[in-house]
Length: 410
Image 1 (cartoon, rainbow, N blue to C red):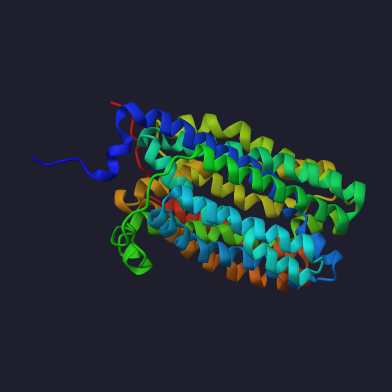
Image 2: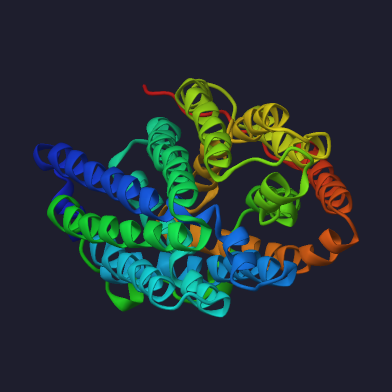
Protein backbone atom coordinates (compact mmCIF):
# COMPACT_ATOMS: atom_id res chain seq x y z
CA UNK A 1 0.00 0.00 0.00
CA UNK A 2 1.48 3.40 -0.96
CA UNK A 3 2.33 5.80 1.83
CA UNK A 4 2.22 9.58 1.88
CA UNK A 5 5.52 11.34 1.18
CA UNK A 6 7.47 12.19 4.31
CA UNK A 7 7.74 15.87 3.50
CA UNK A 8 3.96 16.26 3.59
CA UNK A 9 3.61 14.97 7.15
CA UNK A 10 4.00 18.45 8.58
CA UNK A 11 1.05 19.69 6.54
CA UNK A 12 -1.67 17.45 8.01
CA UNK A 13 -5.02 19.30 8.27
CA UNK A 14 -4.75 19.68 12.06
CA UNK A 15 -1.39 21.44 11.78
CA UNK A 16 -1.44 23.13 8.37
CA UNK A 17 -3.59 26.13 9.33
CA UNK A 18 -1.56 27.28 12.38
CA UNK A 19 1.69 26.79 10.46
CA UNK A 20 0.36 28.79 7.54
CA UNK A 21 -0.87 31.66 9.73
CA UNK A 22 2.41 31.90 11.65
CA UNK A 23 4.56 31.64 8.54
CA UNK A 24 2.58 34.26 6.63
CA UNK A 25 2.64 36.60 9.66
CA UNK A 26 6.40 36.25 9.88
CA UNK A 27 6.76 36.77 6.14
CA UNK A 28 4.60 39.90 6.13
CA UNK A 29 6.33 41.31 9.23
CA UNK A 30 9.72 40.79 7.60
CA UNK A 31 8.52 42.52 4.42
CA UNK A 32 7.33 45.50 6.48
CA UNK A 33 10.47 45.94 8.57
CA UNK A 34 13.20 45.24 6.03
CA UNK A 35 11.30 47.08 3.33
CA UNK A 36 10.72 50.14 5.50
CA UNK A 37 14.39 50.40 6.39
CA UNK A 38 15.60 49.86 2.84
CA UNK A 39 13.17 52.24 1.14
CA UNK A 40 13.96 55.11 3.51
CA UNK A 41 17.21 55.62 1.59
CA UNK A 42 17.12 53.49 -1.57
CA UNK A 43 15.06 55.90 -3.68
CA UNK A 44 17.55 58.71 -2.94
CA UNK A 45 20.71 56.77 -3.79
CA UNK A 46 21.11 58.37 -7.26
CA UNK A 47 21.22 61.91 -5.84
CA UNK A 48 23.33 60.64 -2.92
CA UNK A 49 25.86 59.29 -5.41
CA UNK A 50 26.02 62.70 -7.10
CA UNK A 51 26.54 64.37 -3.70
CA UNK A 52 29.48 62.03 -3.02
CA UNK A 53 31.15 62.92 -6.33
CA UNK A 54 29.61 60.32 -8.60
CA UNK A 55 28.40 60.97 -12.16
CA UNK A 56 25.58 59.79 -14.41
CA UNK A 57 27.75 56.74 -15.09
CA UNK A 58 27.70 55.84 -11.38
CA UNK A 59 23.88 56.00 -11.41
CA UNK A 60 23.73 53.62 -14.37
CA UNK A 61 26.28 51.41 -12.65
CA UNK A 62 24.08 51.28 -9.55
CA UNK A 63 20.91 50.47 -11.49
CA UNK A 64 22.61 47.98 -13.82
CA UNK A 65 24.40 46.26 -10.97
CA UNK A 66 21.10 45.99 -9.11
CA UNK A 67 19.51 44.27 -12.11
CA UNK A 68 22.49 42.01 -12.77
CA UNK A 69 22.95 40.93 -9.17
CA UNK A 70 19.21 40.51 -8.76
CA UNK A 71 19.42 38.10 -11.68
CA UNK A 72 22.47 36.27 -10.40
CA UNK A 73 20.96 36.01 -6.91
CA UNK A 74 17.52 34.79 -8.03
CA UNK A 75 18.35 31.23 -9.05
CA UNK A 76 20.69 30.58 -6.08
CA UNK A 77 17.96 32.06 -3.89
CA UNK A 78 15.46 29.54 -5.22
CA UNK A 79 17.96 26.69 -4.91
CA UNK A 80 18.92 27.66 -1.36
CA UNK A 81 15.27 27.81 -0.32
CA UNK A 82 14.89 24.23 -1.55
CA UNK A 83 18.23 23.07 -0.19
CA UNK A 84 18.22 24.38 3.41
CA UNK A 85 14.56 25.35 3.83
CA UNK A 86 12.74 28.67 3.58
CA UNK A 87 13.38 29.74 7.17
CA UNK A 88 17.15 29.23 7.10
CA UNK A 89 17.43 30.76 3.63
CA UNK A 90 15.68 33.94 4.79
CA UNK A 91 18.20 34.28 7.63
CA UNK A 92 21.04 34.25 5.09
CA UNK A 93 19.29 36.83 2.94
CA UNK A 94 18.63 39.16 5.90
CA UNK A 95 22.25 39.02 7.05
CA UNK A 96 23.37 39.95 3.53
CA UNK A 97 21.15 43.04 3.57
CA UNK A 98 22.40 44.06 7.01
CA UNK A 99 26.04 43.82 5.92
CA UNK A 100 25.29 46.16 3.02
CA UNK A 101 23.73 48.71 5.37
CA UNK A 102 26.84 48.60 7.57
CA UNK A 103 29.15 49.30 4.61
CA UNK A 104 27.18 52.37 3.50
CA UNK A 105 26.97 53.72 7.06
CA UNK A 106 30.68 53.23 7.75
CA UNK A 107 32.16 54.52 4.46
CA UNK A 108 30.60 57.71 2.96
CA UNK A 109 32.00 57.42 -0.57
CA UNK A 110 30.26 56.57 -3.81
CA UNK A 111 32.30 53.39 -4.54
CA UNK A 112 31.37 52.11 -1.05
CA UNK A 113 27.71 52.81 -1.79
CA UNK A 114 27.99 50.64 -4.92
CA UNK A 115 29.61 47.83 -2.91
CA UNK A 116 27.06 48.04 -0.10
CA UNK A 117 24.19 48.15 -2.57
CA UNK A 118 25.38 44.83 -3.97
CA UNK A 119 24.19 43.30 -0.70
CA UNK A 120 21.00 45.15 0.20
CA UNK A 121 19.40 46.19 -3.10
CA UNK A 122 19.02 42.59 -4.22
CA UNK A 123 17.41 41.40 -0.98
CA UNK A 124 14.00 41.24 -2.66
CA UNK A 125 15.32 39.27 -5.63
CA UNK A 126 17.17 36.67 -3.61
CA UNK A 127 14.33 36.21 -1.12
CA UNK A 128 11.48 36.27 -3.65
CA UNK A 129 11.73 32.60 -4.77
CA UNK A 130 11.59 31.50 -1.13
CA UNK A 131 8.65 33.84 -0.55
CA UNK A 132 6.73 32.51 -3.57
CA UNK A 133 7.51 28.94 -2.50
CA UNK A 134 5.98 29.64 0.90
CA UNK A 135 2.88 31.23 -0.65
CA UNK A 136 2.45 28.29 -3.04
CA UNK A 137 2.86 25.81 -0.18
CA UNK A 138 0.32 27.29 2.22
CA UNK A 139 -2.38 28.48 -0.22
CA UNK A 140 -4.52 26.56 -2.76
CA UNK A 141 -4.06 27.47 -6.41
CA UNK A 142 -7.32 29.44 -6.62
CA UNK A 143 -6.09 31.72 -3.80
CA UNK A 144 -2.50 32.25 -4.93
CA UNK A 145 -3.07 35.51 -6.80
CA UNK A 146 -4.79 36.87 -3.70
CA UNK A 147 -1.92 35.60 -1.51
CA UNK A 148 0.70 37.22 -3.72
CA UNK A 149 -1.37 40.40 -3.77
CA UNK A 150 -1.60 40.55 0.03
CA UNK A 151 2.19 40.15 0.21
CA UNK A 152 2.63 42.83 -2.47
CA UNK A 153 0.14 45.07 -0.66
CA UNK A 154 2.06 44.83 2.61
CA UNK A 155 5.38 45.42 0.82
CA UNK A 156 3.99 48.66 -0.61
CA UNK A 157 3.35 50.09 2.85
CA UNK A 158 7.08 50.62 3.52
CA UNK A 159 7.59 51.53 -0.12
CA UNK A 160 5.11 54.37 0.43
CA UNK A 161 6.19 55.46 3.90
CA UNK A 162 9.93 54.81 3.62
CA UNK A 163 10.78 57.49 1.02
CA UNK A 164 8.53 59.95 2.86
CA UNK A 165 10.47 59.43 6.12
CA UNK A 166 13.74 59.45 4.17
CA UNK A 167 12.75 62.77 2.63
CA UNK A 168 12.18 64.20 6.13
CA UNK A 169 15.65 62.99 7.15
CA UNK A 170 17.21 64.65 4.09
CA UNK A 171 15.38 67.95 4.55
CA UNK A 172 16.28 67.96 8.27
CA UNK A 173 19.94 66.87 8.24
CA UNK A 174 20.93 67.41 4.62
CA UNK A 175 21.36 64.88 1.84
CA UNK A 176 24.58 63.19 2.93
CA UNK A 177 23.90 62.97 6.68
CA UNK A 178 20.19 62.26 6.23
CA UNK A 179 20.78 59.27 3.97
CA UNK A 180 23.33 57.77 6.40
CA UNK A 181 20.91 58.20 9.33
CA UNK A 182 18.27 56.45 7.25
CA UNK A 183 20.59 53.47 6.80
CA UNK A 184 21.18 53.32 10.57
CA UNK A 185 17.42 52.95 11.05
CA UNK A 186 17.35 50.37 8.24
CA UNK A 187 19.96 48.28 10.03
CA UNK A 188 17.97 48.33 13.27
CA UNK A 189 14.75 47.31 11.50
CA UNK A 190 16.46 44.45 9.71
CA UNK A 191 17.75 43.16 13.06
CA UNK A 192 14.21 43.17 14.48
CA UNK A 193 12.95 41.40 11.35
CA UNK A 194 15.60 38.71 11.79
CA UNK A 195 14.30 37.93 15.28
CA UNK A 196 10.67 38.01 14.13
CA UNK A 197 11.15 35.57 11.27
CA UNK A 198 12.93 33.13 13.59
CA UNK A 199 10.02 33.21 16.03
CA UNK A 200 7.15 33.02 13.54
CA UNK A 201 8.16 31.35 10.29
CA UNK A 202 7.89 27.58 10.57
CA UNK A 203 10.78 25.45 9.37
CA UNK A 204 9.78 23.56 6.23
CA UNK A 205 12.96 21.50 6.42
CA UNK A 206 15.84 21.04 4.02
CA UNK A 207 15.57 18.81 1.01
CA UNK A 208 18.16 16.25 0.11
CA UNK A 209 20.79 17.55 -2.27
CA UNK A 210 19.37 15.40 -5.07
CA UNK A 211 15.91 16.87 -4.48
CA UNK A 212 16.87 20.51 -5.03
CA UNK A 213 17.67 21.15 -8.69
CA UNK A 214 20.83 23.23 -8.97
CA UNK A 215 21.38 23.05 -12.74
CA UNK A 216 19.63 26.02 -14.39
CA UNK A 217 19.89 24.40 -17.84
CA UNK A 218 17.78 21.46 -16.67
CA UNK A 219 15.25 23.83 -15.17
CA UNK A 220 15.18 25.84 -18.43
CA UNK A 221 14.25 22.70 -20.40
CA UNK A 222 11.16 22.41 -18.20
CA UNK A 223 10.06 25.98 -19.04
CA UNK A 224 6.89 25.91 -21.13
CA UNK A 225 6.47 27.95 -24.36
CA UNK A 226 3.79 30.01 -22.60
CA UNK A 227 6.19 30.94 -19.82
CA UNK A 228 8.91 31.77 -22.36
CA UNK A 229 6.57 34.17 -24.19
CA UNK A 230 5.74 35.87 -20.89
CA UNK A 231 9.48 36.13 -20.20
CA UNK A 232 10.20 37.82 -23.57
CA UNK A 233 7.45 40.38 -23.05
CA UNK A 234 8.55 40.99 -19.48
CA UNK A 235 12.15 41.62 -20.57
CA UNK A 236 11.08 44.26 -23.10
CA UNK A 237 8.79 45.97 -20.59
CA UNK A 238 11.53 45.97 -17.94
CA UNK A 239 13.81 47.71 -20.44
CA UNK A 240 11.13 50.40 -20.43
CA UNK A 241 11.19 50.57 -16.62
CA UNK A 242 14.92 50.31 -15.91
CA UNK A 243 16.34 52.65 -18.55
CA UNK A 244 14.92 55.75 -16.79
CA UNK A 245 14.64 54.26 -13.27
CA UNK A 246 17.77 55.69 -11.66
CA UNK A 247 17.23 59.09 -13.27
CA UNK A 248 13.63 59.72 -12.18
CA UNK A 249 14.74 61.22 -8.87
CA UNK A 250 17.43 63.27 -10.64
CA UNK A 251 14.85 64.55 -13.13
CA UNK A 252 12.48 65.47 -10.30
CA UNK A 253 14.95 67.05 -7.87
CA UNK A 254 17.65 68.48 -10.17
CA UNK A 255 16.50 68.95 -13.78
CA UNK A 256 12.95 70.24 -14.13
CA UNK A 257 12.18 73.95 -13.91
CA UNK A 258 10.26 73.72 -10.62
CA UNK A 259 12.25 70.97 -8.93
CA UNK A 260 10.90 69.15 -5.87
CA UNK A 261 12.39 68.73 -2.38
CA UNK A 262 13.30 65.45 -0.71
CA UNK A 263 10.03 65.49 1.22
CA UNK A 264 8.04 66.17 -1.95
CA UNK A 265 9.73 63.30 -3.75
CA UNK A 266 8.82 61.10 -0.80
CA UNK A 267 5.22 62.26 -1.22
CA UNK A 268 5.36 61.34 -4.91
CA UNK A 269 6.48 57.83 -4.00
CA UNK A 270 3.69 57.64 -1.40
CA UNK A 271 1.19 58.63 -4.09
CA UNK A 272 2.53 55.89 -6.35
CA UNK A 273 2.30 53.20 -3.66
CA UNK A 274 -1.11 54.33 -2.40
CA UNK A 275 -2.43 54.01 -5.94
CA UNK A 276 -0.98 50.50 -6.21
CA UNK A 277 -2.37 49.42 -2.85
CA UNK A 278 -5.88 50.62 -3.71
CA UNK A 279 -6.05 48.38 -6.75
CA UNK A 280 -4.22 45.26 -5.52
CA UNK A 281 -6.94 43.37 -3.69
CA UNK A 282 -9.88 44.13 -6.07
CA UNK A 283 -7.75 43.16 -9.07
CA UNK A 284 -6.53 39.98 -7.34
CA UNK A 285 -10.13 39.02 -6.51
CA UNK A 286 -11.11 39.34 -10.17
CA UNK A 287 -7.94 37.72 -11.54
CA UNK A 288 -8.48 34.62 -9.39
CA UNK A 289 -11.94 34.22 -10.93
CA UNK A 290 -11.31 35.08 -14.55
CA UNK A 291 -8.47 35.16 -17.05
CA UNK A 292 -5.05 36.56 -16.17
CA UNK A 293 -3.87 37.79 -19.58
CA UNK A 294 -5.94 41.01 -19.70
CA UNK A 295 -4.62 42.09 -16.31
CA UNK A 296 -1.00 41.47 -17.29
CA UNK A 297 -1.46 43.24 -20.63
CA UNK A 298 -2.94 46.32 -18.96
CA UNK A 299 -0.10 46.53 -16.43
CA UNK A 300 2.45 46.35 -19.26
CA UNK A 301 0.63 49.28 -20.84
CA UNK A 302 0.96 51.38 -17.69
CA UNK A 303 4.68 50.57 -17.50
CA UNK A 304 4.97 51.88 -21.05
CA UNK A 305 3.19 55.19 -20.49
CA UNK A 306 5.15 56.39 -17.44
CA UNK A 307 8.43 57.48 -19.12
CA UNK A 308 6.45 59.23 -21.85
CA UNK A 309 4.46 61.15 -19.23
CA UNK A 310 7.65 62.29 -17.45
CA UNK A 311 8.71 64.36 -20.45
CA UNK A 312 5.75 66.70 -19.86
CA UNK A 313 6.20 67.03 -16.09
CA UNK A 314 7.97 70.19 -14.84
CA UNK A 315 6.32 70.64 -11.43
CA UNK A 316 5.19 68.71 -8.38
CA UNK A 317 1.54 68.76 -9.48
CA UNK A 318 2.28 67.26 -12.88
CA UNK A 319 4.67 64.74 -11.37
CA UNK A 320 1.92 63.68 -8.96
CA UNK A 321 -0.24 62.73 -11.94
CA UNK A 322 2.64 60.79 -13.50
CA UNK A 323 3.24 58.92 -10.25
CA UNK A 324 -0.43 57.94 -10.10
CA UNK A 325 0.18 56.42 -13.54
CA UNK A 326 3.29 54.73 -12.19
CA UNK A 327 1.25 53.26 -9.36
CA UNK A 328 -1.25 51.84 -11.84
CA UNK A 329 1.57 49.79 -13.39
CA UNK A 330 1.13 47.47 -10.38
CA UNK A 331 -2.35 46.65 -11.71
CA UNK A 332 -1.39 43.16 -12.84
CA UNK A 333 1.98 42.58 -11.18
CA UNK A 334 0.75 40.07 -8.56
CA UNK A 335 -1.22 38.40 -11.35
CA UNK A 336 1.98 38.09 -13.41
CA UNK A 337 3.78 36.45 -10.49
CA UNK A 338 0.85 34.10 -9.94
CA UNK A 339 0.90 33.28 -13.66
CA UNK A 340 4.57 32.32 -13.40
CA UNK A 341 3.69 29.95 -10.55
CA UNK A 342 0.79 28.49 -12.54
CA UNK A 343 3.02 27.84 -15.56
CA UNK A 344 5.93 26.42 -13.53
CA UNK A 345 6.09 22.64 -12.86
CA UNK A 346 4.70 21.73 -9.44
CA UNK A 347 7.97 20.17 -8.30
CA UNK A 348 10.19 23.07 -9.45
CA UNK A 349 8.32 26.25 -8.52
CA UNK A 350 11.09 27.94 -6.50
CA UNK A 351 13.91 27.06 -8.96
CA UNK A 352 11.75 28.01 -11.98
CA UNK A 353 10.79 31.31 -10.36
CA UNK A 354 14.46 31.97 -9.66
CA UNK A 355 15.47 31.02 -13.22
CA UNK A 356 12.81 33.31 -14.69
CA UNK A 357 14.24 36.28 -12.80
CA UNK A 358 17.81 35.19 -13.54
CA UNK A 359 17.22 35.28 -17.28
CA UNK A 360 15.10 38.43 -17.19
CA UNK A 361 17.35 40.57 -15.04
CA UNK A 362 20.66 39.53 -16.64
CA UNK A 363 19.34 40.78 -19.98
CA UNK A 364 17.64 43.86 -18.50
CA UNK A 365 20.86 44.87 -16.74
CA UNK A 366 22.36 45.58 -20.17
CA UNK A 367 19.79 48.32 -20.66
CA UNK A 368 20.35 49.74 -17.19
CA UNK A 369 24.15 49.81 -17.64
CA UNK A 370 23.80 51.76 -20.89
CA UNK A 371 21.09 54.17 -19.70
CA UNK A 372 23.61 56.87 -18.77
CA UNK A 373 24.53 57.23 -22.44
CA UNK A 374 20.93 57.97 -23.35
CA UNK A 375 20.67 60.41 -20.44
CA UNK A 376 23.78 62.29 -21.57
CA UNK A 377 22.24 62.71 -25.03
CA UNK A 378 19.16 64.15 -23.32
CA UNK A 379 16.62 63.12 -20.70
CA UNK A 380 13.94 63.05 -23.42
CA UNK A 381 16.00 60.53 -25.41
CA UNK A 382 16.24 58.31 -22.35
CA UNK A 383 12.50 58.45 -21.75
CA UNK A 384 11.49 57.94 -25.40
CA UNK A 385 13.74 54.92 -25.93
CA UNK A 386 12.24 53.41 -22.78
CA UNK A 387 8.75 54.08 -24.13
CA UNK A 388 9.59 52.27 -27.39
CA UNK A 389 10.67 49.13 -25.55
CA UNK A 390 7.46 49.22 -23.53
CA UNK A 391 5.35 49.35 -26.67
CA UNK A 392 7.22 46.34 -28.09
CA UNK A 393 6.78 44.27 -24.92
CA UNK A 394 3.10 45.07 -24.54
CA UNK A 395 2.38 44.14 -28.16
CA UNK A 396 4.38 40.89 -27.85
CA UNK A 397 2.35 39.72 -24.89
CA UNK A 398 -0.96 40.88 -26.37
CA UNK A 399 -0.26 38.81 -29.51
CA UNK A 400 1.61 35.80 -28.11
CA UNK A 401 0.87 35.63 -24.39
CA UNK A 402 -1.13 32.66 -23.14
CA UNK A 403 -4.55 33.34 -21.69
CA UNK A 404 -5.29 30.94 -18.82
CA UNK A 405 -8.61 30.36 -17.18
CA UNK A 406 -7.98 30.77 -13.47
CA UNK A 407 -9.12 27.79 -11.41
CA UNK A 408 -12.09 28.15 -9.10
CA UNK A 409 -12.80 26.12 -6.01
CA UNK A 410 -14.94 23.05 -6.45
